[in-house]
Figure 1 (cartoon, rainbow, N blue to C red):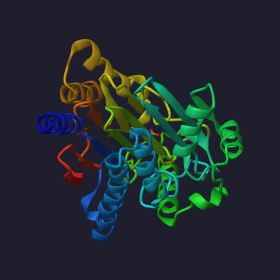
Figure 2 (cartoon, rainbow, N blue to C red):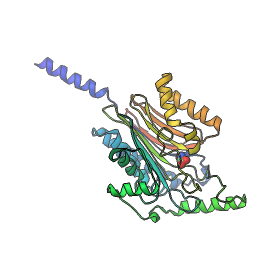
Figure 3 (cartoon, rainbow, N blue to C red):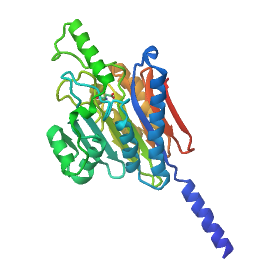
Figure 4 (cartoon, protein in one colour):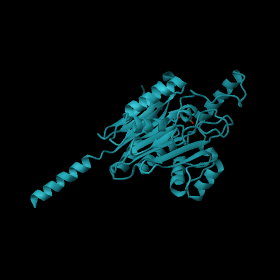
Length: 331
Ligand code: ASP
């Protein structure tokens, strides 16, 4: 009897041990000018990353799903005015906040996304609702808002997304366009404004499921209706239990053209590359050669974490299978 009990205990210990949980997040990659980055900002960034990681990790540790973990971690970053997602989103050339988000469940390649929403408090929740409560993948603008409201999500006045810091940023951008004598219609969105600071998360749960999420206000000075890579499945977000989960940040047009998130997953699937190698090649070679700046976070089924970027900074953090929390901003 004793031997059976001991064997059972051993078996349980082995099977629990064999199932790591892990979480990785980003809050944007870009060029950060160290001089204009105050210690107060730095403190806030690290504190928000930590809060987000702990919220997601607690769900994973409690046996919750990767999907719930990425949603919870992303909501915290959306609600934090310091990041360019939800409250704190950047302004379009017209002085509006238009938000994009997506989520993917690596179990059966289910995905949901919203683009160009202006009244949904937490776009990531709307993305999840699209995935779970509709037969579609991507809703935009008024349709996305109606869908979110019909599904009981919290709706806000567009003014909710206003922050002084982002408003100053768009004013500076507008002045720069004037100085360059470029009308808004022809202007490029700002590639470097205070760097990108979109948010994203990838999690691995104890059942071996991977989920990924991305949420953003897009790029400062983007034109009306412009949608970036963040809500495009395969560009800004991808998750497949058989390969990895990926969330991207950077100059969205490049991430769309190069299908960055899916390219990394495909390299793992077809070329049998490690997540680290696939991520490095795509970010440091493919994207860089094309002129696309930004970065990615990723996580595979073994709990290997990658955070690869070709800019001088990417706000990022992780809690790996070892349970150690790490956050960083610069290289
Ligand atoms: N990728 C986002 C976009 O192009 C911006 C970002 O990552 O900050 O909309």
